[in-house]
Image 1: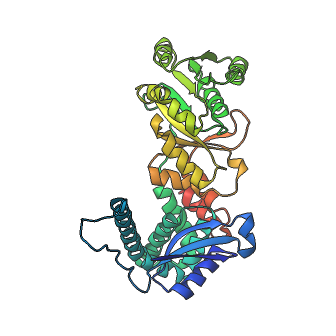
Image 2: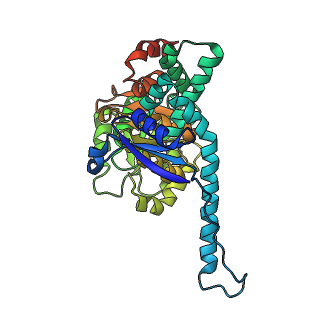
Image 3: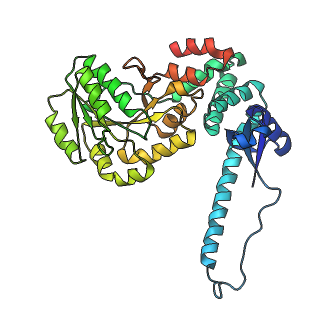
Length: 377
């Protein structure tokens, strides 16, 4: 098994180079934009895996189990782990090589795949979507010019959404968690104004962001301006008492501090208090401008809060939206709301498939009109 990187101006060009050199059995491992230090080599780096011409030599040790040098057991375990990893890669290569060859053999499908990857969608997810569309084209005899509409339809089908307003699922409290700078506080105010004041329902804002000096003041000011009730909570244990005292409120909006990796470990009590309360529905707030790898890491780290849904903010600060589909499809967590600016509450909207799919496929000029008609239907 060997890995090799190909640099080119487009993903499609890199795929063609790999196909010529490694043959149809090559497996696409990853794609990414090159950094500034390697930009002269090409706009994109595409990594492929291919089977080695010969099997790796077996590593053995003479003398049986006796007479092993110190550390031999550890080395043997590492070799065994390496062998298992190679077998896993070989299995993945066998499963995907046919699919990659099929995509690269068709110009329309290769272009569709390249556009999805260019939007920073995971390469394996993009491959799966394009192959599904290819099957539809073959079985239903759909014109290949309709690939844009078919991909839009497939993305809409895969994307989990749940944009019901706060309280619609029987839970009176909504808590927003997420990393620093994700826009939790601004999003919380938008939700409170839109679904609290806007529907004339008795509402309460609770802030758990008391670790930093004056951290609660912006939210306190928002609450004063809008006329919403506000209260700061000092300890995780006080969450239960505060919610009990807010039973007369139909909606409760809970703001939490932005936590670094180290702070997450120290905030286990806070996470448990929120995750275990039956009345709280937790949403993980992530900035759409984050790197895909950072998004994945945040989802894993904030799992201690047991978030049920995802909210994406700062949509106005990025031009690639593939990660907004990667996470919900991979994790099964539905997207609830989208935010693209600072206006309250105008810049908050319920998540819908049409908006997200159009963002991902916006550069597909050939299929834009088909996309709109398909998503609307």
